[in-house]
Amino acid sequence: MVKNNGLCSNVNNKGKNRKRTRENMVSKSITVAEYIADFFIQKGIKYIFGFQGGAILKILHELIATGKVEYIQNYHEQASSFCADSYSRISQDIGVAIATSGPGATNLVTGIANAQLDSIPTLFITGQDYTQNVTRNNAARLNGFQDLDIVSVVKPITKYAIMLTNPQDVKYEFEKCYHMAKNGRPGAVLIDVPIDVQFAQVDVDSTKSFTPPREQPYHLDKTVEVINLLKSAKRPVVLAGGGIQIAKATPELEEFVKLSKIPVVTTLNGLDSVKHSYSFAGLHGNVYSNIIIRNADLILAIGARFGQRQVGKIPKNYTRAKIIHVDIDFEEFDRSIKSYINIFSDLKLFLNKLNKELRKTNIANYTDWSNTAKKWKNKYNDTAEINTEKLKPIMATKKIIDLLNDNSVITCDVGHNQMWVAQAFKKKGTMRLINSSGLGSMGYSIPAAIGAKYANPRAKIVSFTGDGGFHMNMQELLLIGQKQLNIKVVVFKNNTLGMMREVQARYYNSNYHGANPKEFVCVDLKKTADTFNLQFAKIEKEEQLESISDLINNNKPCIIELDIAFDSKLSNRYDESHIIEENILDE
Image 1 (tube, rainbow, N blue to C red):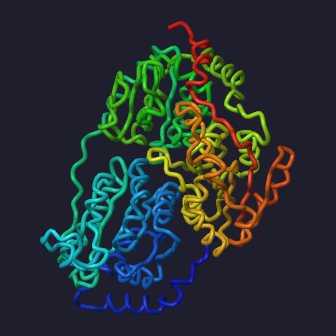
Image 2 (tube, rainbow, N blue to C red):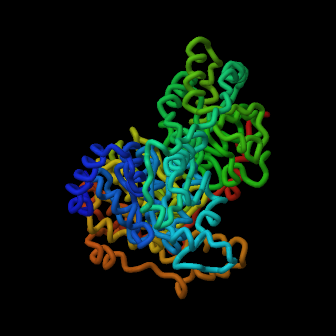
Image 3 (tube, one colour):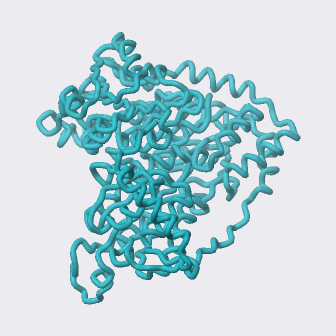
């Protein structure tokens, strides 16, 4: 169990006394900061990530004074935002991060964008300079200190962002932000709170509340039409996206697959949504997954957004199937690929209704189609592993995943490492695979592992990263070592930016700017592990992988270095297009 970081212990008694006194008061007048602290307690939020600064101290003080909220201080605000993102994914509740004004707020921006693009319910709170400075309409570039207009900065990358200038609006705005972050298509919200507003007194009973707007009705009546289309299909496929986990619909999807016996292919973010899938399709998807999608005559896409990395630049080369697209966001329909039917719905409700209809009827027998899919998987299972020198990345990843239990959480960075893990991943039990998908942010994996550990302290947490992304938030190893969080950091080390080097080879005449030994090297990982009080192992050969079983299964944090070839490669759909074309069935 992750232990309290010590920040709450000195104020617990004061917090209890303050709360007891407040309950006995005739007036419910409290400060805005106290209201915010109590709001989080009412919502059951246990952890808040952040980095303190002068403009956020009042809120931070009141949070800690409750004795019920643990503040996890990172060593960079970007890491805090990634922690909140990952915490939300694993806890399936809202993730919260705080920062001070100015640079503290701007350091959150990457994580805010990441949560928004991957539809992760997150709330970000920033402190702000005094209201008189930030609202003064004199065209000055700066009136106070660190009085940056963070709301204008993040509006394009949030569902909602507001500066709280009227203390009496605190209840309304926090209720609204919480609702918007979690409902509909989830995402990121931000509230900016000036210092003087944090100290302002409000009467809780007289402040207005937020009333959620009436939602548009879901298209649940279309499930009958879906059943009829499934009955007439010969080669149907379920395309499971990241929306499955967000909607908490994994049991319903598992039941649908069991009832229908339809093959399942996933997106990158949908890889951990269902067991026994045919991996993920897309640019770097396994070749057999892309063959299955290409040959389908009906695709039931559930919670998948058909991004360019999924569909490609020419959608007809992706599939010629009829598409049934089920999503909670109207804006995703027909955006990149035309659907036969669009169904607006919460995914859990849709699958429940579909399963109910399915239990009352018989659909087609897809045994021949399923057997064909299995043959492709067996025949082309190794095509993604194209590395011939030194340690093979996908093979090494598979062996490490085999050592994990069914409750493990795997976090990935971005680049070759992310796709090697995705190509190797096979879900066991309730295992989770966490990616920065929409934004594709390097430096995500290590902070994401920290957020996952606080969300599920009993889970085995493994952070896979390349040596590029590793450096971007390696300061968080200090938090891992300081608290001895049981996180295993696996680094694919080849002293280069592999994916950029491959792009430069393909399209820029092998001009390896920033990806050659003169311009990029990896830190000594053994010395790094010693510095941050972590255990260490270096793997150079396949036979050494068995030796790390004890390291994977003990309760200590560690760095595992995978020594891979400098020019390690990654397969993609265009390299394998001839294989896909050779396996096209009769239309």
